[in-house]
Length: 193
Image 1 (spheres, one colour):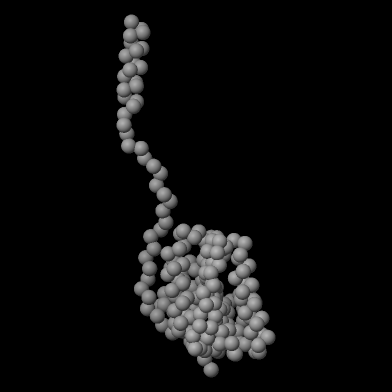
Image 2 (cartoon, one colour; image 1 turned 135 degrees about the vertical axis):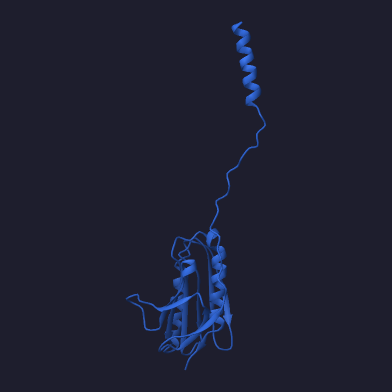
């Protein structure tokens, strides 16, 4: 009798334990939804500096308060995205000075070569200026930098930094959005006399 009862219990256990339930898989990690502000551009004229440009209204421009900052260095704060575009303007004294500025700018980009998966150089040229827009892929401190110059008197360098550690997947949409703003700044850049 004990054998029969044990057999019935094992049979019932096997029948009920082998139900065909739908297997669940873990969900992929999600990221915050980003509501992009409307792009309404306005021109920024900087005090005692020799350049002006257009930026969206949601960007805030303030002088750079870093102790080593020069007079015409400004920061563009993109508060909705936790990002800052650092702008460094220099007057070009002569050809030697221009080559030093170009070399310094390139060195600043290629300091990130150890962490970058790829560095893409996009050449910029108009009748007023020329330069390079750098896109840095990977877990670098900065994901976009540029410089523009008229080769005679003006040189402007910009680098975009996020306030938190960058994860390429999570910042990709925001980075694309802010690159468009940076390119608009470059397109609308005017050297003042």
